[in-house]
Length: 251
Image 1: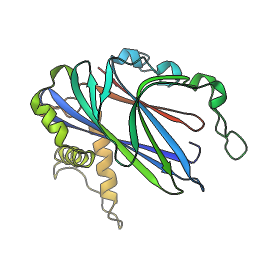
Image 2: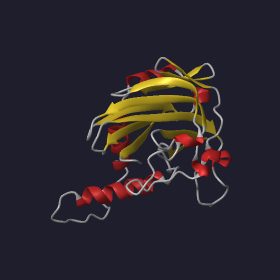
Image 3: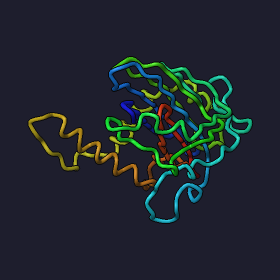
């Protein structure tokens, strides 16, 4: 949006039968020819699926009405707290992060750069004018520069143990991704079909397709559940200079 590229990469691994660890790595890249100030606002919510989606088998269309009120989430240092329970952490990485209790935008703040060279227009239904209780990440990016920050969450906030907190504290987005990919690939056997092409990366492409398909299957007979009890929904809504990222976990 507006020559700023946003990438959200997530991975999830099981800690035990009652808990999973979800990591999200957010990368922001400046593809403009001049320096840019970027803002990413992340709201973490735990809602039932029927609060987020039109039940059932309807297309998911995100607009400002989907930006639901926060529910007892706070930031203490870099620890994410729900009620009185530590459920996650923020890793600032190369961005400045802070808790933002409230931010208001006027309609004039939207579509500032709209024109022939910037044919992006934010419709009224997409305008988030009041944002509360979010993690605000900010950075000044030179042309071609990118910055990152990460968020980790324990998905079952009602059953957090010392063991889970220890795993959370010692984990990283990169390590969690490697562990998740290795676990998925362990599901494959030598009996699966392999395609060989002159380019060595073709097998990797088809492996990734298999992994994507496996992620849609929540339960595996006689095997550990690979998906968390919470379903991650990442919704994006951008405007003018700011960019807002809504991370809402639905149970």
